Length: 392
Image (tube, rainbow, N blue to C red; front, side):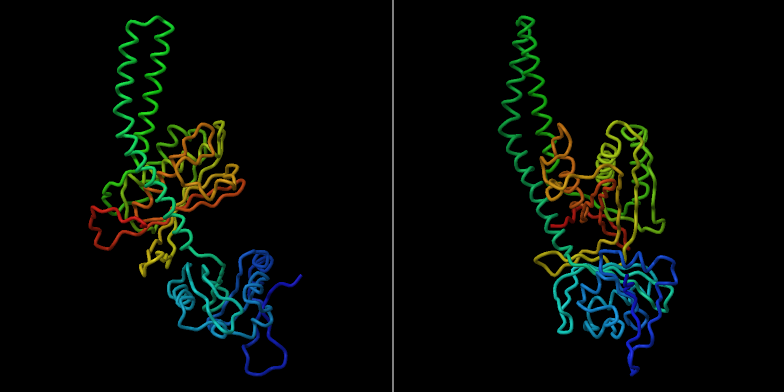
C-alpha cells in the first residue's frame, strides 16, 4: 500500500533535497497518518512537503511524489493566513488552529473556505503537521444565531403566555380551591387535578421566562474552580455512581464570563451526560476537559469583526450518542431525545453561552458525545462589564 511519503523526483536538478521518510521516525506514524480521513501533510522548516496522506493528495489534486517537488508557496500565496498560522506554530512551539481561511490560487485546482490546524513536528527542524479540511466555522456561528433566534422566539412566547395565561390561570386555580371545600370526595379529586395542572402550566411559563433578555455581568472566572464545583454537585447527586475524569490544561487563563451562568451551563451538560452514559444509574464515564487553542478566531457573518475564542471547555460521555435526526436542531427549544423531556435545557444552554460571548458545538457518535464550549479569555485589565456580549 502506498505510504504517501514524499520522495525526491528522479533526474537531479535544483529541486528540493531528498525528502527522507520523516514519519518513519515514529513507529506506526505512516499507517496512522495515511489512514486519517482528514487531509494531512508534514512540512519542513522551508515549507517543503515531506509527507502527504491520500486524503491530502485528493485535496491538493496532486500525488505525493508531485507534492515532494514543491513548497507550499508554489501552491498558495505566502501572504495568506495559512502561512501566518505556520509561523505561529513555529514561534510558540504549540498547536494553532484557524478557521474560515479562503484558499484561492491559480496553481490550486480548488478554491473555497477551509479550517486548518497546525502542530509542531519535532523530528524535523521547523517541522509542522498541517491538517486542512473543507468547512466554515461561520456556518457553525450561523447555526448558533439560529439557535439564539429560536430562544428569543421562546422568550417572546413566554412574555405572551405570562400576560395572556398566568392571570386567568390564577383565577382558575383559586376557583378550584373554593369548590374543593364543598365538593364530594370524587369532585375534590377533580378540583385537585385542576390545581395541579394549573401549577404545571405556570411552571412551564416560568421556565420559558428564563430565555428573556437580561443584562449579564461578565468578569474573569477560573473555569477549573467552576468545573470542580460542578463535579462536587454531580458526585453527590445525579452522577454519584459514575466515573468523572479531569483532563485540564493547568495553564489556562481566566475565562471572560459570568460564574453563575457558567455553573448552570456546565451542570446542564454534565447532567445530560450522566443521563446518557448511565441511564439506569450505571457506571458510565464523564470527562471534563479544558484546552487552549492559539489563534482560534471566528468571523462574524455580515461584519468585519472576528471573535477570539481560544478557551475550549468540553464535557464528554461514553453513552450511545445523539440520534442523527435531531443533531441539526439539538439546541432549539422543544427538541428533546428524552422520554417526557420538554426540550428547553439545551436551548437555555445555547442562550447562556451566547450571553458569555461564546459558542457551543456538539460532536456525537455511538460511544462518544462531546459538548464543546468556545469561550473568550479575560482581558488583561480584568475589569467587569455590565453588558452580556453575546454572539449576536
